[in-house]
Length: 501
Image (cartoon, rainbow, N blue to C red; front, side, top):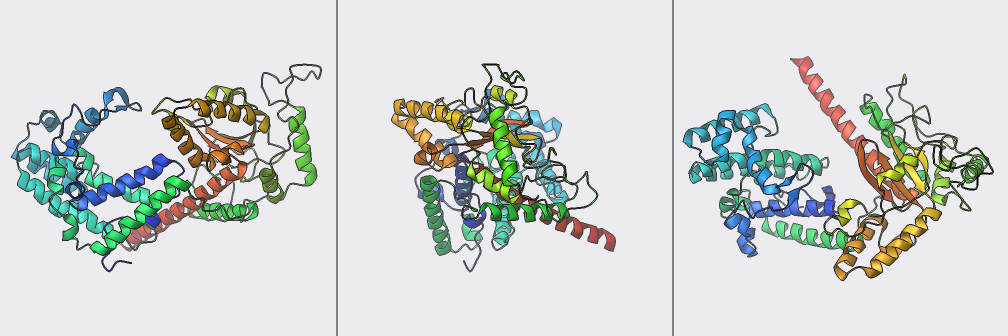
């Protein structure tokens, strides 16, 4: 551990290795790189000073389109004016036109100071926005003073968090972004690159070098081996134990939660959400039912046994071993009713009773859109698949299993598409396969797919096995417990302070 803490988030408290998507992992890398570039003369030191910093040009910087908000607008057109929203209305037009003066700068500084005193997370005006105002007002000296005092202060706070085991990457990044606002000021880099804030913070350069080397090794590991699975060595029984302990503790800390094992409908918190094990007869009965009946409300559903178009959910397959192992440990995972929309998994009687026919219209694919949108390569649709529901996913959703009879044609379509793809596009497919399924060879061995869909979020989540999804559920439950207990501790502290007044 460095003698003087680094003003950075330790790698062990980031999601670099655990982020399921390469995009998520790369965000961690990029944010850390920006910290380093803010603290040191890294631009010139690496001879990578981009034109967007040395000579910002609104017509060239960030030319990508923001499809989520305004498809016709370039990102820079949106970011380039977003910072003025924290200004008084009469100043906004002048700010957009670059016609600011010393009085405007004074008002902006007072507003930034007031927002910090109120603890509003810099939503009123970020440091970056005020630096931009200073530069537009022609006062580089005040811009430099803002950076040397306020930006240094933010990273000094980061130093104080270095040894805190409860540091949350997402919360810390949000706090830093809300206060700092680097994206609000292209001009800020002209000063930052010559300020050497790291020296002002007495950063141990040897420790910094070790941090960078560690990061390089972890980046190499993440992008060659894929995301780590923190619970990969746990049995199904152990996974369920962690899942149960986490949600019981989370609901004790936050009994008002309205989703993911909500207890609002019952009188007291259960000591456990685990159910009795399903018997061999119940599991066999479920398999037989899925072989004899089509999904409810599907086009093939017909009580007439002589209907030649009748198509059962299962053909010759049995339920996957990992899912049967789950049922043998606990016949479902819910609060008090199997049909509870905040429960995670149904019991054997409820499995396969939901209408899933509408999911055919949700455009499920082997690779989600984010992996294929850049080059518009084929994301391999799951056409005319059969599936059955096994739970609500904790929040009014559908957790479905897709059997081998529907998975095999999808994998065959992928193999053909992959073989015909260019070398560049092959790399995209390989990256997606590594992130989601453990690599190309692991993808080729997939027999069952598990897909989760929520009516409030059309984006699918997909795994190459039931166990993969269960591990995700455990990760989420552990995180919820940590967040709910932290919030409960804060609430108790605040209530204590009020009582003492």
